[in-house]
Image (cartoon, rainbow, N blue to C red; front, top):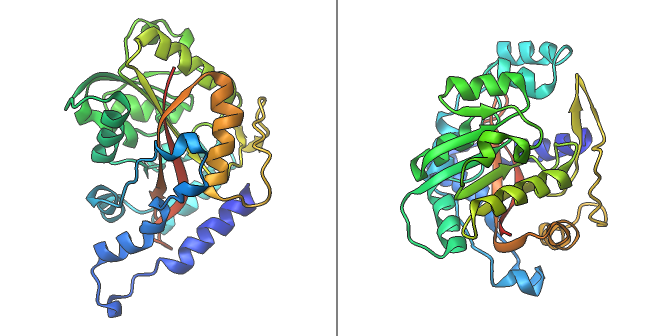
Length: 304
């Protein structure tokens, strides 16, 4: 995983240097570089998915994220490097106020929710964000909901969420939490957790229970990084997940092949129905070396 991450970030680093000589604005440059991360080859998807594709495009929200999110300066980056000898990567990021990411804008999320639920509401009741990190995802979605509850296992990230005003439940299985099960959710989100938790199948089953408890209109939106390369933080190191997801794909499979395999080998077995699928970049904060880092997400909008 470390070698793949290095290769991915090196690739982005080599292609994302802004050159004003090309007679384009920085916003146009960002849109041009991120454009391919939204492109789906629908003909390569399973026939049951082809009619459920919701194409998205880079919008002002991702540009604002890249332009306005504080970058990791050299001094803090050095501090972060040494902190990771004593704490997990996620806890270290939380301690330094790092770990911000952009997956969906408010507008993109609203498009997917309306498409999946077949309604035209402007605001919904309750959102549950599972594995909410430092809070950038619930911050983005806050205007769409009257209530937000989050979960997070990292102590430093949980603290960051509470400091932002969110209820945060530090639970491994959210379906066992009384407050969560006492709430009827319109939407559950779980972004970029499947490849970083020890029991991803159990997590999906847990969220399916919450869907059942919330009613027939409730939906689950998950973001999954492809190519799928899971590991779990264990103290200052990493280990294999307890529940292994084998998509049975070759080296560096296409995004479409990964989507097909994840649906057939994971989602179908858990009993989750795909309402919509989309492709977006998972953009994380930059540093003194580069403006931003990008890998590819698949967005699955699911129901029971």
